[in-house]
Image 1 (tube, rainbow, N blue to C red):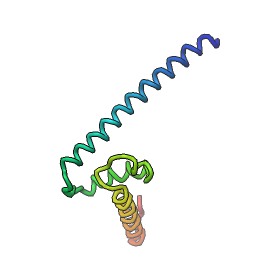
Image 2 (image 1 turned 30 degrees about the horizontal axis):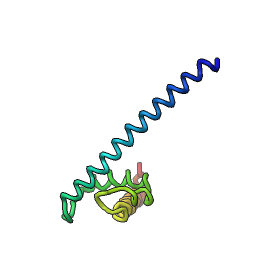
Image 3 (image 1 turned 180 degrees about the vertical axis):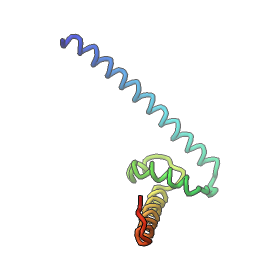
Image 4 (image 1 turned 90 degrees about the horizontal axis):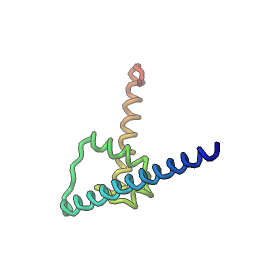
Length: 106
């Protein structure tokens, strides 16, 4: 039985290594693409819609401040996390208003 499992383990490890290399290559490309984009902007201010802020902050919150500091982002980690706090506060406020008006928050 162990002879059958060992080749399977080898296959799983090889597949995991291949996937990891591909994912890292994609991440490296996207980081470099962000650097190029920032270079082209040359200090111009980017304008984001509320939907774009929501999408960016959802991903940024998962990464956390320490990792955001290590990668090349279009806006600073402080800005991303401030947007997140603001969006959470707005959501809490909307829920409180709905409850105060007698509706439910779902």
